[in-house]
Length: 468
Image 1 (cartoon, rainbow, N blue to C red):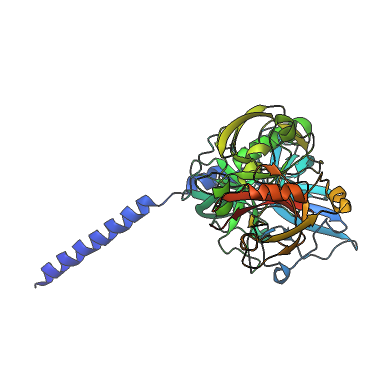
Image 2: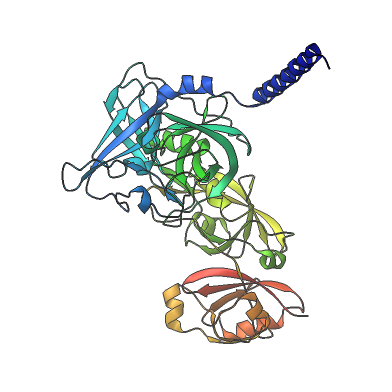
């Protein structure tokens, strides 16, 4: 091979390599324009507060617990007073009137809030309102010629889609990180068991100080507000969670108008449906939210829903698991009349429900428990009349107390425990031992039946399958 031939071969291979790199580059997203246009509207929030913040201390990186947590960057400067301390988070401007969105936990308990922009302007911020249930807060600053971000109106974010975050992790101003949407509709109940936010999960590098910062799509629109991370080290391990823009729009509109948030409220306690329960309720697969308790006089009670109904659709939206129901109900305006599809007596039934209102300070919640398994008589149970004191304490009109569970019986396999109070077998109320025996006698061999019981004061359903 001549020198000229070798040179030609080298140039050809080099051209192929460059072409390959160009093709790969053409497939990757371009973030520069988004950063240039959007970063001026992202702000750094500096909070000063006296005394310990509710439920929070002043952790160093080595003290951050190894579980899902809200994240917030505390600076290490010596306090000016024994109880004064400063913290930092992120936020973003959504209107030229100076409205700013951030996390509730960023400004919770604040004595003063300072907003610093990328052009180094600083403003004292007024807290318009906060919503702990969604972990959102709305601030206002008095400024002119403010840059503004646009909230996505489509709600069409897809798993696998590229997203971008801008914030101030560990106090490092206006840092940019990118990744993809890992999942949607993640349920992360609060300390009070409330579950109103269907979080977006991403692998975007989010760290303490990113709290309240925006999550962008490739159109430069805000699709979420960064709120939580899962970490074992105090830093990002690729598990971060953002509040979706559908929740942000709803909460911001209410905070701006009223200074507080009112949610849709159904007035039920719910649990998941497992395989045994699905069979006993006539479902072809586990799905829906099983109603285990109704708030007396609540919207569900007034509309005619019953304990033992399985809600499989609410206002036209499928309910695949119990955790999805609070997400749907919470976004519906109180007073709205919506169709609810339930499975009752192994048949679908549609019921109209007028959704109630749940104010920010109300204690009523939509809660969800876990499914277990159960049954008795031929079921392998020894029961007795439930003590009057227990019935009164739990608000029951009747029931039978499980005194003993026979090993390897149907009830034992289902998970019934001694001390449970059985109140319903199938659709038959159990208010006495006689009623219990009649209900059990009416069960067919090999049938599956839901059993409602009270366990340690909490109502639940268990799916029980009789032996052939």
